[in-house]
Image (cartoon, rainbow, N blue to C red):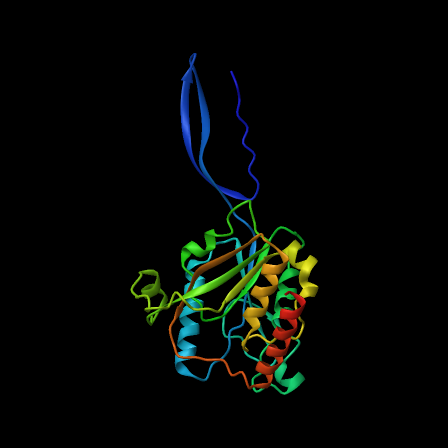
Length: 269
């Protein structure tokens, strides 16, 4: 009579109990139907106390969707400044650098490298993934399965699809929205995720002074990733309520990011 031993590490299994009667004895066997690797993941966001009511609503719905859909292996960190009142119930980490104070930028926008470095040092294990996502992005339940695999990539680039307005999380999760024509052609990226060990090895290639929320910040990250590794995924898995918006390339932060982008194009030609 043979025995089967199944070793499971950090995974959740869907199982069934099989009863076998043999030679007057009853044997109980647990048969695995499927295994799902629950990869530790940390998501950083930067929620803002918007004065604009529509922007506040879009962000509020996105946060409610995140609370409703995230899996237990995902930890969410909301980055804010010490003088700001947190607008979510997620764990907060205070930002140290402020582009308005440091360079006179029109808005007090953070530096993306500070956020990524903070996320990379929250856990001692080197095999977890972490990333940043814009705070008005809507995540379906399918998004959280992307990292549930034993084949973690070095980096993930996430783009979005534009949808019609949703007024609450239930409306979104019920699928009561439509895709906007041409909304799957959006050129920018709204989220980047990294394997911690890869980031620690390559983080010096990413500028400390690239400002989040200004033009080209995502272009810089995408360009560097594609030149440093072939183990990345470019996915259009994010949803976003369509609204008019455009970069201010003449802002102090915009000019700063454009200068960094020009340098990156030369360094990673």
